[in-house]
Amino acid sequence: AQSVTQPDIHITVSEGASLELRCNYSYGATPYLFWYVQSPGQGLQLLLKYFSGDTLVQGIKGFEAEFKRSQSSFNLRKPSVHWSDAAEYFCAVATNTGGFKTIFGAGTRLFVKA
Amino acid sequence: DAGVIQSPRHEVTEMGQEVTLRCKPISGHNSLFWYRQTMMRGLELLIYFNNNVPIDDSGMPEDRFSAKMPNASFSTLKIQPSEPRDSAVYFCASREGFVATNEKLFFGSGTQLSVL
Image (cartoon, rainbow over all chains, first blue to last red; front, side):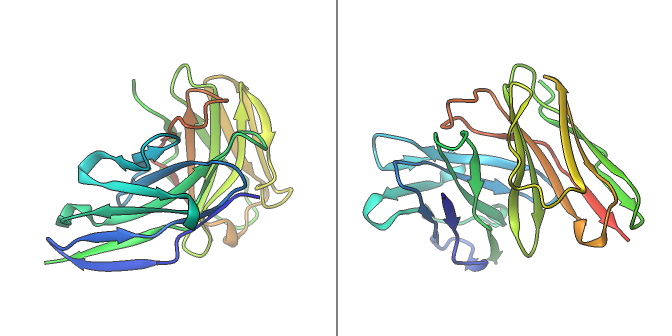
């Protein structure tokens, strides 16, 4: 069965510093991969997605993610973090087997210090 | 479009009471998902529907939970009887296609459920 692992429960970075959030997935075939962001009291919003082509994908708000098949990873990066990026980030995988469902990781909460 | 609409935003109830959460997906979307979010377990998929038909309810924790989608514009998640461990944020999400899983989910704002 497919699964998503986000090994970091929370991360703290200084404003202006670079960011990398880790995501590993387990799935037999080529997955569809997503990163979502959740601000406090809100639902999830899509940052970016990958399903084919260039393994480096660009998203909104200056985020990017790189798909590495050999490592089963889809890490999210941002070169310079802003205080408004403080939120919870979820990696997700969607599959075309077993009914086309989307499974989420446990999330990583990002804290930004001044 | 108003987006995915969930009601109520907050629900406080006593153990043993019936709780009904409601969701209106985005018009024209074919798939609807119910998720539960807790600190301990993160975001769990409970059940999802394609064209109003339940496809996979393996995430529903137990028989106390039930979900329906009587038409394309409305779904309910019911807990009867409720227990304190059901306290969580429940999200509804919809997706335009049911085959194209590369499409994104649109989430509602969630229902914060507290069972005392």
